[in-house]
Length: 403
Image 1 (tube, rainbow, N blue to C red):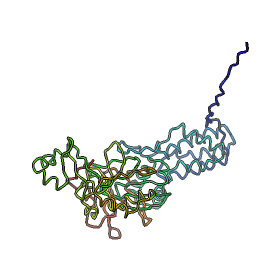
Image 2: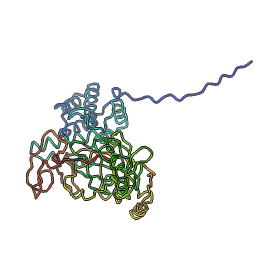
Image 3: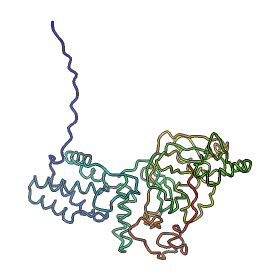
Image 4: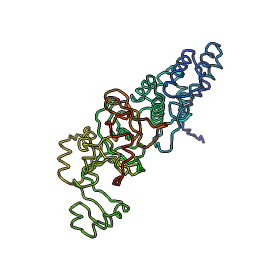
């Protein structure tokens, strides 16, 4: 009897290249040395002589020494660009992580050396946002030591986010109190926002926006209901209902409408901080220079225009959004492609006009507080003269964040 034994052929796993076994060409090492020398202009504190060591190894024509020195220097530079060394350490309040593990960096470096695409690989790890390069250019021009410290702090923050944020994404800068919509490196829209009071700060975090709720209900948290809404509903149910407040199925709620604390729309954006981006019934507050007024949530100006820009790829115009809102019925609109959202904190940023502007450090997170200095009709932060650099920190009575 003949036994037939079938052996299943399993493809061999791909063998990862060891960066220590990949040879450095002199031209590649020279390219690396140039990047290392320019790193100080990005606010990075690499070894003062690492670039010289690489060039010395090139001159010695010692292949093993060049591989060792260049490999170590390259990894230090790559870690630095991903916020893992050589500048300010990422603090606990920054909840966006752009770090890349040594394993992935080493593998990418080995692949780049083997395929002779080192320069492209280095550029893919370095922060690629145009605001980062604008701050690098400003640091080269700036002679004021205090402003240099603020610029370096903000450059470090850019190294704490992913090198590439995506083709289409939303970016909130808490310090500037603006939200921007980006598409392929260009700003498609810019909206004023209201952010958290210094005593109830809006967190720095990232999530995905998957849709919009038009005419949302406000599910009132028990802690907020206990502050007065609950007694108001029990004491004067008719008056409370006229303002949209009801008690239903064991909870206090506010019906959709112009009085609703969420306004006419909110984003679908799950996150562990219970923070929303939404409209508001108090739209006059957007006229203020300082809009640190909420209990942590982000209220957006021209909310229906904003919603229509997010939904345009799914066939929604502003007219269609407004018509749907006019029905006063809650409508959940899911986007066909979710969009990344980054809620950040940059006190120095390239303005739409091109120059770098300094914004008030309302949460006191910079290494130094810049003094107010009159320039072209504004103080150093860009606010109107006479408002004072402490205007945002003096705000009291922050409104509760709806949930």
